[in-house]
Length: 255
Ligand code: MG
Ligand code: MG
Image 1 (cartoon, rainbow, N blue to C red):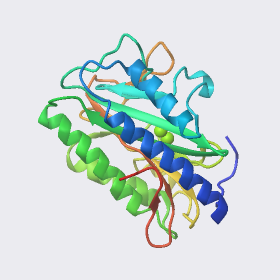
Image 2 (cartoon, protein in one colour; image 1 turned 135 degrees about the horizontal axis):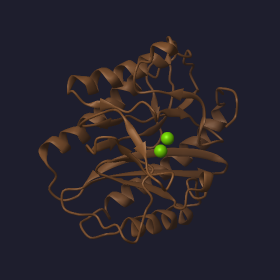
Image 3 (spheres, rainbow, N blue to C red; image 1 turned 180 degrees about the vertical axis):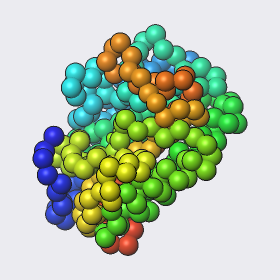
């Protein structure tokens, strides 16, 4: 991780737009493949092929030893689920797919939580509110605000529904590294104060991780798989954005 928060130049932002678009397109492509019976391994193979075919490099592959190109996190898995030939999507599952790509040295990073078949209404609601948390947080990503404004917006919305807001995993700066300072928490930590001030041209990934139960997580023996401590379902939604003067620019959402 580089040590400093960076403001990107216009030409750097243009490169991040290209990388972000590819990540958004990859997630759209994967959304079309999510169905009962597909393995998370197949989703991973499709993701890597799609990213490479379109001129990118999957940034998760071998990142600190991660063995795949996407994270596939089902139900109580919050993040960092490892794709597997043994894991098939089942009716009623929710699956978070987290995806990153590098194009011309610049990164995009985003995640969606998809419904598999008919999902319990309370879990559908969790998925919808998690997306809302992202957009409410992102609205605060404007010059002159501080990190705490993003955190407060995410946390306040989730707590209205009594949901858990994961604390031990956070959003992050992004650029020519996938993870750069600052950390972008989804809850107000009194120790952070207001957090750093936001400037136009900062690029960050905002990624609420919200649960139907506790905010506490545990990490499995594989060193990656992060689940809720109480086994409750978790949802994850992420985009890479540029801090703007009046509104953020979302780079990884392709309509
Ligand atoms: Mg991220
Ligand atoms: Mg991500």
